[in-house]
Image 1 (spheres, rainbow, N blue to C red):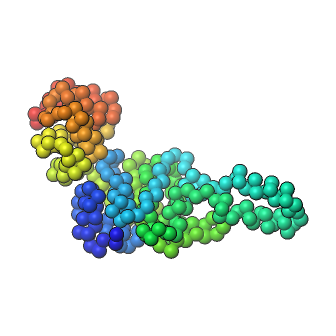
Image 2: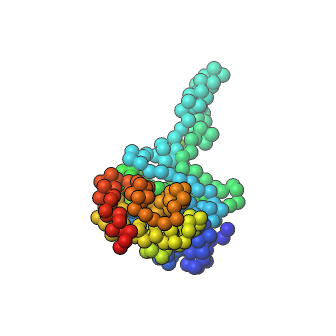
Image 3: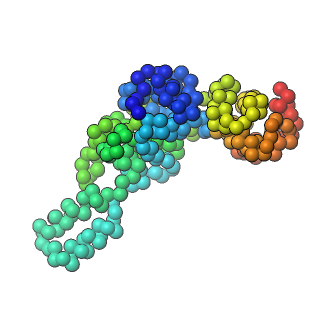
Length: 299
């Protein structure tokens, strides 16, 4: 599929993948695609940041390449590493075959760093030329805030020039850059140098109307009245001082859980029994359980 030509096209593109985007998010997505810039999405967990990349890959017919970030992530896990066992086997076979002398050793040293010995990781895979005809892939760098600052510095060349330099091979540059989406839950601040290379958008919790639209798309089997009750309860729940407020993902999960329990309306007993679907910390559950649930239902 072709890239969107207008903001409204971008909104419709996301909607075709069951993603309800407001105008500001649709604008950010359109500009990222139009200008060929990475898009950095920040927001609380569960508000739909990762889903943007997944929907773009699905609706544009592109391959999704995901790099899940974690503390201690380095180039060998994110970019490439050499297949050392295969290299050692090649050296051994060369020795058995009589490779000797300075010229033979030089040729062997060059050969064992050929591309066939390269184990490609997500970042390098995203820079490979597209051979399927579907266009460059969507590269999702998920939860960047979980990594260390040195890894952010490592990303600068890729995000600014869409290229990477491998000491043994040289510079790898694709004919067309990938679509890059980065996400952060903002557990720490992302460095300004990286932010300057990206377009930025904050995804907040949706209002009741948009959350209801999302829930109806993601859990269409829910009765209309129950869907409205669910959204109203979650919206009220987010006004309470909790350690972790429920995201849209939890709203959808709760709707599906109530559907599995054959519920047609919210009632205190069922809500108390299923609070673990919405809330992920025991202190939050204890704060809400019991009388507070009834208050929120009757508000």
